[in-house]
Structure formats: structure tokens, C-alpha cells
Amino acid sequence: MKKLLALLFLVTSFPVFAQKPVNLSTSKNGTPIYHSAGSGANVGLGLSFTVDSATTRIDTHNSVPNQPFNTMVYLEGSKKISLFGWVNKDSVDFYRYNVTENDNHQIVEDAKPLSTNVHTYINNKAQIALGTCLVANKKLTINLYKITARSKISTTIIYNKDIAPAKIFIIALNKQQKGRSYVEMITKLDSTKFRADKITKSMAIVLNRTDLDFVYTAYLKNKETGKVLYRSNNWLYEYFNPGFPYLFIDAAYFKKPGDYEIEIIPTLSNGFRSKTFPDKTTRYSFTIEEEKVDFFSLEGLSIYMVLFGVLSGALSVYLLRVYKKKTAEKLAIQKIKLDSIRSQLNPHFLFNALAGIQNLMNKQEVENANRYLTKFARLTRNVLESKELISIAEEKMLLNDYLQMEQLRFHFNYQLEVSEAIDSDNIEIPSMLLQPFVENAVKHGIAGKGNEGHIEVYITLAEKDLILKVKDNGMGYDSSRNYAGLGLQLSKNRISLLNTIYKENPFILDVQSRDNGTEVTITLTQWL
Image (cartoon, rainbow, N blue to C red; front, side, top):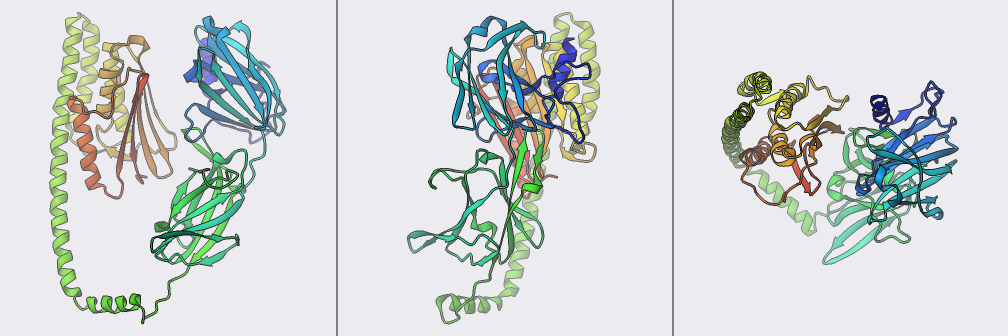
């Protein structure tokens, strides 16, 4: 029964799209389906809900930008829902919740949830009822908190309204000239022509307010090539009254003469996949005209100087060839340095693995030591092959072998997932890129936690970027300091050198460590 309910939790954590009439409210035997709405990990509870039979679509666990404790649920067709929570059995009386309708009508204020029967959905968890709400064409905001930690509020948005196309309020060009700044407003919002001259610094796109601004993503495209030049959903609110959302696009993206188009598309994202609403796209086209030059002006005279400079082109070509030769030499040196770091990482890994075998033998765990040695042999063969690039499938196999080896020593749990959208057999990454960070999570994160230790490894994609994540629930550390760990330091040096080789596809390393765990993210930009 526990396994069945756990499986149900995993299934309902992802978007559900009803392509034909499907009853999303009950299972085949007529029992209610509990859909996961959010973890509420910061206040120690899980939020779920049931829907009525009128529901035609459910999207859960959609992220809210810059608000890590907030999630959004998108519904279509629902008339009413019932809200439930899952909390520790011994702390049911410590929780309170608020429900606000359409951002301006609070229908529940600081209410104490009702206890229901203790449920086996999650071990040692009790089910609490938060009531039934009418949601037809409504937005509900549910805030949950623990009275012993009022500053930690988990917020879930239930949205059961039509997501309307964005409406552009105004386009503004920000310009700077001779120590002064000014804004040039563009009020004609159909296709237009304007000139982005040298004093144009950026373009501001201002939208009319909606009750769901964060779902809109703006794209700047070159109309001739169809290439996306800029993408953002980082809407700001400081300057335009009454708080109209806006964002800036640097003029460097559109200074080249040609035809451009801004597309604003509603997008839902739950961290693993994104769902767009192309039929709700808002478009705005504009043309950048080539600047006309007055040859009697200072600018015109500078052009004559440039023409004169062309006569020295032969010298420039020669200097360029010299520069390319030196650049090639530098690149060869960087590759030698990179091979040197990899040659240091291999014995570092082998030494630590042998120490693990010795530790098991000293504890008389002969059977586990034999299992460890079997996986170690296969892992060693792959490590010593010395390939710079390996497929994601091979990297996953290496990580599985390593984590299963270390499980024999430290008895932790782990989860290793590769997005289904990734062609793991044909997409390659630098070999052993994740292993040192996984090793750091084991040795310095969860080694002393036993069965309570947990490591998560995810390989996902975002547009053309490949995202690699390693998370643990250890005690964390000060990520701004340099520690003596050889493997971690070598890996940072390796990423730095990779960026000198893959300049068009930089590797971005981000380490976030808190007292409840560490998260390492490596982004391979434009890798796909």
C-alpha cells in the first residue's frame, strides 16, 4: 500500500494534459486522486488537493521566479477543489493557513486545519484538511505556516482562469547623450521603424498588469534568421506606476540594422520541463534602419580615415596571422594543462576508492568489500581509458557505480535522473565532470547521516543549455572559502581551463551551501 501511494505521489507531481475526456478526480476504482501541489519543505508539510470531475487539465509544481518556497498549480475546467496537508503526527496543532481569492478577498484567515485520520501516505505523517474551495474562474493563494516559525511561509497559487495574452503598454528607448539621460517613448505598438543610434543604451518593454505576470517570457528574435537573440522573464516593478511589469533589453542585441520581433509567450515550468501557450503569443515587430552619415561632419571625416586605413590592410592581415598562431599555441598549452589536471584526478579517485575497500576490510565486512571491489574494477577501467568526452549514458553508469560503492560504506540513499528529452547516448560531456562533486557530497555532506543521508543528481536541459545538478542534505559549508579538498579544487581548475577551450560554450559553476544541504549546478551553455 505504501509503495502504491508513493508511486501515486510521483505520478501526480508532473503536468497532466487531458487530450480526450479523462476523469482526473478519481481512480478506476472510484477513490479520490490526491494531486501534489507543493512540498512546503520550509515549514515541514506537504500540500495536496483533489479536484472535481469537471477538471480537464492539471499542471502542478510550476515554479515562481525568485520565490523558492512558492509553487503554482494551473487548472482548467475545475469548479471546486479540496485541500489537504501532510504533517508530522505530533505537530498537527501548530499549523495555520490563509486563503485569498483573486488577490483581494481573504476567505480564510489564520485558520487551524482540521485533523483527519492518520494516513500511511508518508511514514509518521498525519493528514489535515484545509477545506473545500470554489475555484471556477478564480485564482486562490494559500499561505501555510507553523506558529513556531511564522517567518517561514509556504505559498501555493491555484490558478483556474484563462491565461490571457500579454498586452504591451509602451515601448521605451533609454538614451544617453553628453552627460544626460532621457527616454524616447514609442506609443505606436504595431510594426514600426526606429533607429538605434550610438546613444541608445537599451529598450524597455512595459506590460499592462495581470494577476499572473511571472508566467510571461519575452523573446527577441531576428526575423530573417529566426534566431532568438535574447530571452527573459525577469520582470521588474520599481519605476512604472502603478507597478507595471517591465524588463530591459540591452541595445547590443538589436543595434545591427534589420527586422526584429518581440514575442511574449505564457510559459509554465516545473524545473524538469516547460509548457508554453503559443496560441496566447503577443508579437511586436520593428525595424532597425541603417544610420545615415553626413560626410562633412566629424563622423564623416572619421569614415575617410577608415578608408585610408584600408590601404594598410596587408599589414593587418600579417598581424592577424601572427595573432592566430600565438592563439593556437596558447590553446595547445591549455589542453596540456587540462590533461595534467585529469591525470591528477584519476589517482586521487583511485586512492580514495582503495581507502574505502580498506575501511570495509578493517570492519570485517568481507562481503561488502567484495561487492565494492567488483564495481571498483569496472569503474577503474573506464576512468583509466582517459577519454576527454564521454556520453551522458556512460557518465550516468560511472556515477551509479560510484554511488553504489559508497552506499556499502555509508548506507545513504540517492536518486540519479536524466531528463527523457536528452539523447543520452549521443550527447557527450567532459568525462568525470560530476564525480568529484558527488564524492564531495558523500564524504563531506552525508557520510555521518547513515540512512538519513540523501543525494540527488539531475541532468536536465533548458533550451540549448545542459544543466547538471548535485544536491545533498548534509550540514553545508561556506562555499566562498577555499578548502583543502584536492578533488574539488582540481575540478574547479578544470572547469576554468575548459572555459578557455570552449569559449563559445562556457561552463558556469554555481555552489549554494546552507545548513540544510549543498547544491552544485554546472551549466554547459549552448551545448545542445
